[in-house]
Length: 185
Image: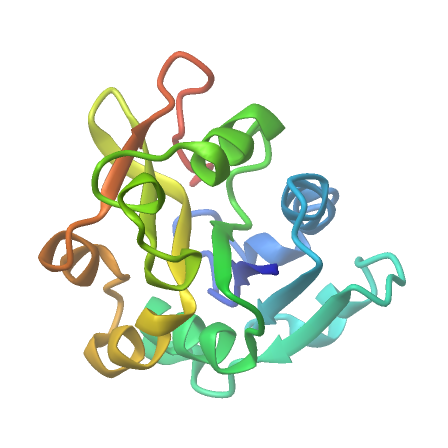
């Protein structure tokens, strides 16, 4: 079973306000993960959480988690999401990638190499990250056996990249499907 995590807690300082409040963005991110086959999606909110809750359509597969320390940076949001995750792996995306096509999520979920599933590694041990022209991006697939150790490495406004690289992430090139850039302005 694969769950999803939408990181949507930030204040959006470069954007001019919380990105979770941009009409359609929360829905686009949760739909991306649900349509990819995630059985449950944890939406991590922080800045503007009360207003953002009202933007999500009721769906029993969507779980809202508030990162109380969201102002400390992305690490706090990712820790909150991982703490609420269930299943064998999580597919993680950001709220500010509203144009990401489902084909990107599907490729990250189904790509296998010598470094993961085809070599006998269980989904619980998998680490995969979408890349765009070699530039790391989202979504990211993290097997359950990594959640605790990854959470312990997260600090301030840094995400999981250092952990992923140190543990042999499989990079999944998706530049032919999308640009992968977030919406900051």
